Length: 317
Image (cartoon, rainbow, N blue to C red; front, side, top):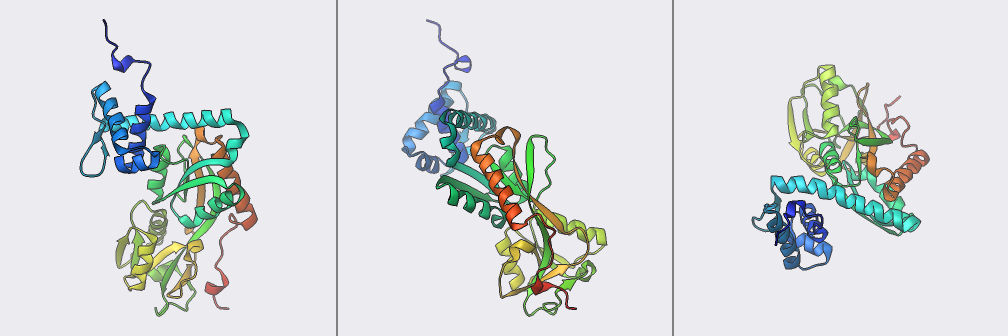
């Protein structure tokens, strides 16, 4: 009897593909099994069966992790699209009841900018659940393009034809110093005042750093030294320890008695925040709900108005 070449077998096992996709997304057989509610041996055997059927190696199994091989990375891009389409079909067939139920995966370069939208969605539709991943602007867009999240919120300008972006908020970069810094009571600075100062900045790929460095270069201002850190929390702690002057979005500065914010005069420091998704995912019910909620909040809270220095850091008359 002739055997069927598995490469051309139209009855490809979707259970095995789903098992692979879960492990690829989780980066671990243990975590994927916990997420799926199945035993790890079951998930492992399904992935192994898929590899054996096609004579490929999809994971480098070292330690507790499961690192994708080049073939695994290619297959993951396909399965990501496959199960997105499956979800679209389920929503279409289920009708409107799925508009207020489901799981939305979100990536953002700032929890501050996205959390009000998620909270409003949760308050209105208790059947929703969320996954939120935080990274710099480049990482956030890569997660979206890799089908690992449904929606991204980022300050990075979007020109990719595969994406659709709606403005969410206008913001502005300010600098901040410890409360006992000589500049703490100045309120407003000129960009030239920063020449020769130590600065605490985010890693490359951060829109905060990208915009601020561009403004410094435009003004011909050279800082004394840059101390690079990877999170906003690390920026605050470095400034508190006198490593230099920090840079932050005005909306994110919040209330911290250790610091004083300084409004930097001049152009080039205004930044827009966008809600972004893949064009083919924009009609999905949960994605549409996110965009509609974001637009309503932006209108109600004047998020798209021109940012101005709040009274606490305004220039003295």
